[in-house]
Image 1 (cartoon, rainbow, N blue to C red):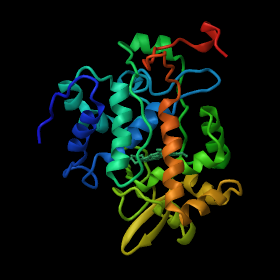
Image 2 (spheres, rainbow, N blue to C red; image 1 turned 60 degrees about the horizontal axis):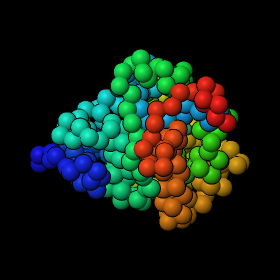
Image 3 (cartoon, rainbow, N blue to C red; image 1 turned 90 degrees about the horizontal axis):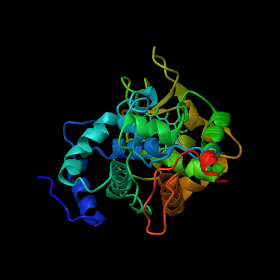
Image 4 (spheres, rainbow, N blue to C red; image 1 turned 180 degrees about the horizontal axis):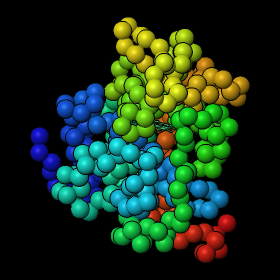
Length: 292
Ligand code: ZEM
């Protein structure tokens, strides 16, 4: 199926092109969807409310230091799968394309429609990225850590406990790769289907430390398939404020879809400062511009 040039501004048309590249028989579980969702999340998740920089605007991951950050290892696969769409449609910014790919993947996997607006602009060079974005290293969460760490990272973006648990349900998609994060395996049996399985498995399975020479992670076996949880995933049932939300989402998939959709939509908008027309300007650090 060949990639088409879509009329400028037709984002529904771009969604159609994204759906064409979702199917990747030679790759992982046959889908680029999970790695698109991770790209959209990592592009946005380096936002800081306090410094008011980072976020999806700019598509800084095309340049070092973001492109070489070990936290982003493997996301080049997602960027490469999207390249033909970008090449045929140079009018769309990378930052809009990456975030749109994430939400198109969620919906195509059976998940909710996530609110999304175009208008992000791209950094034109590594130097421009550096100037606008400031220092954003080490802002993404470390899967080897616990509840305090997750809360610190996500409150820096402006998220509540409930939103943290809702967003974490994205681990129903995809897997860990030893050559990327060092961790290994999927969280659920069908990792290309968006659902509340992640919460159900967290609560109902016996998770034991995996005996191997890789990083510390938990494992269980479901119908012959080995599944995994990161220490940060387990923190969601160990922490008394996170756990009630895991229980709610395990019981009520509609509630999970609704809350996930709002929280993921909010994540993709962080740091995207729009003018009246919806166009997002690249901003320098808030302090320099006298913003709150
Ligand atoms: Zn993830 N995530 N994530 N995540 N993530 C991985 C994979 C995926 C954490 C984390 O350390 C890891 C969110 C939150 C958090 C996805 C979506 C979202 C991997 C495996 C790790 C280690 C990477 C690899 O080896 O390829 C931590 C610590 C998180 C917070 C506590 C949020 C929020 C997400 C979206 C809303 C997805 C879809 C994947 C699967 C990627 C793939 O390639 O299959």
